[in-house]
Image (tube, rainbow, N blue to C red; front, side, top):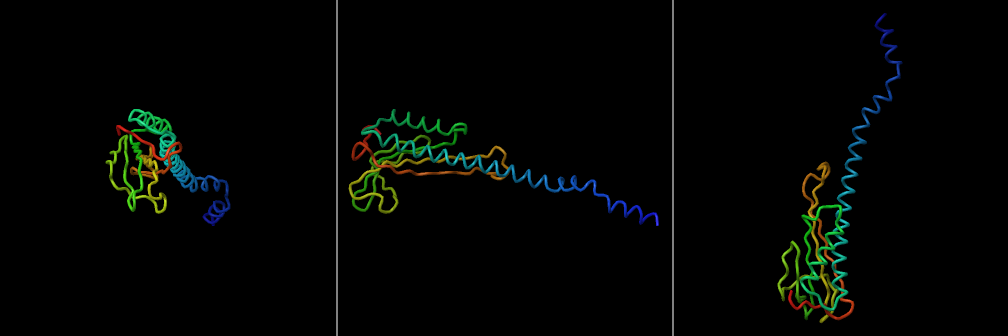
Length: 178
């Protein structure tokens, strides 16, 4: 009889329900929060790397002619856009390409962490981007993102973006020494 009354008392006692619910839900909510914050950091790094590619193409497309020193300065601006993320794994390349017949060939290219394309190399472009004889500035950027927490993204994640922009002040941006 004594056992039944003790069991009834324990079964009807609801003072610890909130603590048990918290103990069950807290790990799930904390894990969700950590994963979401890690995803947001990776997304922000990817968006900044895309802005680097667009900004490099935009700055080069505004010039009639560029030099290797000018391009190096533009690449440095790309590194500033990535802040507060590390620029150690940011790689950039900018090239001027022209369509001749059925092929799109490189006029000049310069890289920062990426190998420059060779003059005359054939590159693949999106269909119908260029008509015969037209030129475009092609800016490429890659970034290896390593999450500080390694919770959701335990490995390096490589982001890459290619941006195409027509020269603004001339038909073709030149670089005599690239």
